[in-house]
Image 1 (cartoon, each protein chain N blue to C red):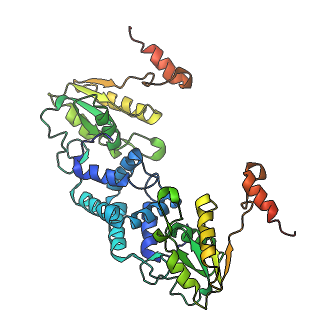
Image 2 (tube, rainbow over the protein chains, first blue to last red; image 1 turned 180 degrees about the horizontal axis):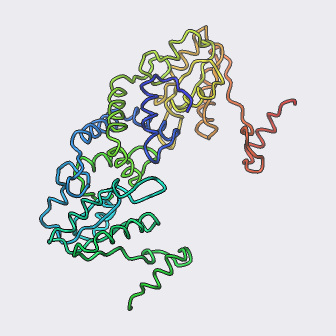
Length: 201
Length: 201
């Protein structure tokens, strides 16, 4: 990115914005100009929201979720079913499941998936903590909600093996046709899985 | 965007990020998570950069550029040719021209283009200030670097008429084939302009 003649402060703002996922150098410049034009309406609130987040956001000591309280609102909620723990790779996956409003369970954030190529082994993930939680007599089911990728599925197998004698049921998300999906756009693996797991109509 | 169960502070951060150009609700969530994970390396510096920008950035009283000094670094630079003023619609255009390093002139930011449909008239733009600057005896040329759109070109015509008796030469950017452009992807208007303005080889 060539230097712009607008002072090092603006240049630094653009460089930091360009590091956000989804923003490249060009859109970071647009975002910086947009912020500068909306100084009162957007730039000041965003600076304040970032400062608040820096101060207040913590990683939940039970499940690894991020929240402004610790334990997080989900772990602290007595209406949440304590007998099922949903294992996800990342907080973004937790948010996606919460948006789907499909379950009322608790979560466990691994912090990634096993990936020998990237040098991510079991010690880099919150797997020990999960095994400990799974041995709680109140816990009856571990739901593995990991990505349907090679790394996600090998992580699921690894965890399943570890939980073999924990006395819990280990389940995983169903594979199949996405709701709204058209068959001729789906890959063979998904179609084969959907046929294998077909259900009575 | 459905509510996420991560506290109102995170939700507010996501909502503010989603208002940036180039970020939608989904990418704003990704950006927020990315910031939270990189609290020390990115979130704190970004909050500080925004706070600095809020404090320091001003609109140049001569040309309308934004900078942390007033007059801006370009207007204050004695090595800049004071005899030519490049008229642009927006600070983003100024940055683009500076990156091209094609000229050493001074600038005048209009703050938009005339647009009857959007209710933008001459009084909404810095046109009076431009006419005043054009009457400075030191100024010999006004270079209109406005978008090659209907609004941009009608703004160029309007300014040309106003500067009729200012004793300055009024020029505009050349139309033609973009460098690296392939002829069969170009629209007819550009091709016709490139043929009309053909140059000896």
